Amino acid sequence: MKLGVPKETLPGECRVALVPSALPMLAKAGLEIVIEAGAGDAAGYPDDEYREKGAEIGDRNATLAADAVVFVNAFPANPDAGRPDLERLRSGQLVIGMADPLGATEHVRRLAETGVTAFGMELIPRITRAQSMDVLSSMATVAGYKAVLLGASHLPRMFPMFMTAAGTISPARVLVIGAGVAGLQAIATAKRLGAVVHAYDVRPAVKEQVQSVGAKFVELPLETAAAEDKGGYAKEQGEDFLRRQRELMARVVAESDVVITTAAIPGKKSPVIVTEEMVKGMPKGSVIVDLAAERGGNCELTRANEETIAHGVTILGPTNLPTTVPYHASQMYAKNIQTFLKHIIKSGELALDLEDAIVDGTLMCIGGEVVHPRLRQILGLPEATQSDEPAAAKAGS
Image (spheres, rainbow, N blue to C red):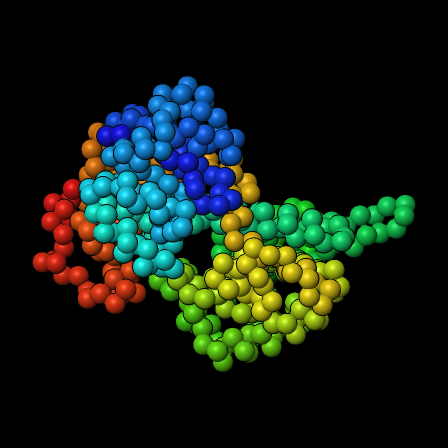
């Protein structure tokens, strides 16, 4: 089986789906690799390094003609710049990548019409044996780390405490809202830089995790028993809950020099946690880094991909921080992809077990149809029955 790795076309994207070190293991699994010329340049992986690991260097047509194609941003997540690739895809071809399936579901339907078998890597189930394939966790790790560096670079004061002949400098106060993977990495990074770190999450079960990386957990008197879904993600809360949460959060935000927000609900608009009134109460020169900006933001004043200054506070709304650390973000993503490919390809042949939780959980479309239950629900399609499954799916091919 031939595996193609095209150069990413999403504006500003510097990552590459596979790095040279991942190729020998894939070759042992029976895969021949063709890399688009220059695909890894922006991430720090030149063509010669791929050649040294046995890859063929070709043009875009060659990579998109392969039996399987791996992207960082597959078409649904890159609908404008990725549209020309659609006409080059063919029925039965394997497409793997991040696809924003819950936010760009209509584009998943368009991808399905090409007849490809497509997997959305954001849908990897959060089970133990799938941890090494979890691209959301990998990229959130990078985002949480970089968010702290952004906050530190924009803050007009230093993070650590210094005792000098010129006097004592008190440490910066950092508040992290949302203690998922990105939040925990942000806490750990801010702590390493010497800040005093507090963290809040609607899920009380994460208190021990927050404390384990060096932060004090902010406890608010709220009913949070139903705040987490079966997959470990935060659930969407009602407006009454959010209003009360904002009232209680105001004092904590006002005491912070840097606020990093990470509260996101898969496929939903981000909850507004930091209001304009809270921003007004923050010290002048403070910084908010809103990692939920792509879905509207956790701060009322956030503008996606913009730096906003309001009431003396700098508000940053980055939407793709992993691409700003492309070397290691690509390395981590490639490991996820490599492990996933080994899971579904045996001796150079596609071997899909549709009863497997990983395959079933990530398969978006096959045989010309959207088959993922949650995506079908979003699209208003009837629940698929066994008799409705495409023939290719039944055959496991």
